[in-house]
Length: 425
Image (cartoon, rainbow, N blue to C red; front, side, top):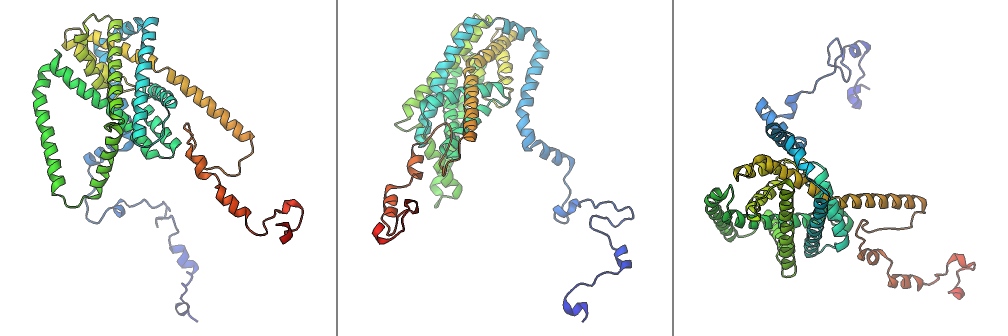
């Protein structure tokens, strides 16, 4: 029977096998591997991307975006060192004493406690558990990580993920931190707008020119959104998702139960940041009044919100040096104030290092005990820094189920040493 009739492929002869290329060969006498054809991944006839488009795609990659803020902060610090010299940094550091460090720790305690209270309120509004004591400890740890690591936000990311994982709801844990930070930024923008529009500052004229245009733009955008919402018959999937997010934000920040506490805590935290800036100005030798320093502090705090820094350093120093120079107080003095503020803020977050080491040591001891102890028969539920009371009720065997099992006929245990007969039941 021929190979065509059986459906099998004929084996090549020895001469044909010598002429056929092997897998991985290019068919050339040298046997070089085949290079992947780039045209296979693109449709036929499509032009190859140019060098400009390839460069833009590389700049927009995730790795470059991750390090862009750090590079920007380093560049700003390098320009300041080049223009003003290192003597300003050293002068600011030499003026810090023990009294200023103790005052910074006290101000940091007040701002951290009220920030943790705001976080707990927002978490309660989102129906996720967050005790006040662990909230203060985690907030201290986040502040230290923000000050010690590049980017200035890695500590907040860490506390969001840890809280969400501990409660078994990562999404709500992240939302609680985002809304808590948004509440602080909204308070800063509102108070900053009032201060920059009323008190003398380097940007007073520009702020008064921009404020009406910004108000008109906001009103126009709100009118467009309302018109789109009224003309849309059925809301889209994205609209429903956005509506759910806004409902959660309203419940966490503006509800009757949480709204007053969020407002009070945000005002106290903002006042603490301004007090820290005034303390840094006094330590650095600035003798201007608080009314003169208040707009400069608002500008510095707004610059600190930019994610282009190295552990908080970068835009704050540049904006403070420019603001002090424009106000007639000297750019060098402004840079010294920013340096002292950064050191005092780092000192105020040092209790977070204690929390970090204590949590690491506790976790290390827990792992060693778990390795030495026998493994439990069954364990479920979320584990973390915030043990949930519902996990015990959810995964514990029900009393009714145990009674039902014991009421089955012939339910005597073999360990009793007697046969399972009707008389033994």
